[in-house]
Length: 301
Ligand SMILES: [Mg+2]
Image (cartoon, rainbow, N blue to C red; front, side):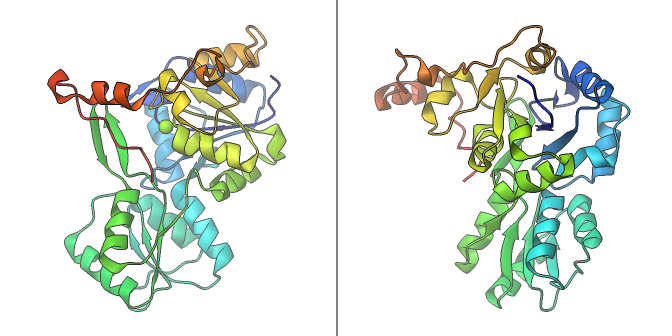
């Protein structure tokens, strides 16, 4: 494999909770050393790129700058600025979203906004009521990303922007539009930052519904790493498939260095003996007498 640019997901790919995953440090060092263009892409709309520089620095990855990050908040701001010059927004989100909208020249408006923009973060009750009222009066509903839940640590999650958008869809009957992965606009804009053609870029991610789906739909190579949310045995459930599957970033780095070429598709879906789990098998897995945790719903809608 000879890649000329990488888009790299963060949670479940380079870190989990507050520790780096194996290979992350070496991969970033290699990318910087070889001047391989790369951007970290995240559906988390809460942090600013500068926050992410600091976070990765604390985890041990130094020498990064804000230009190495593209968030769903920035993607939302880029989209609205392009689609609707001089629009205004009522914002439910954190610093990353507010700053991205401000940089794109989109003012806050709690009287007659063009959009209600929903991002990550716990909503204040009075803002829930206000946003509902504004949507009913004609503001369009936009969410930074479709994630219903986000990992906090193993077996602990928090509600995501997708869940909050669904709340407003239910209360107003209006449909939300979702930016972030897997929306191809996220991949289009992140790829532009690399100044490479789509065929010269590969997405590296751990989640089928967002990282892999969006890349495949825009015609980009997609590498699934098995250090996060998607397990190898889950692959047979999906219509779309990654271009390659790696155990983690250390294997990807070996591949990029040509030490251990693994450009074959590892997906069990293409194994002649593979069959998706039957309904009966799923039921057995979900049998409450197993005292196993309830199966988690899909990460996005
Ligand atoms: Mg991830």
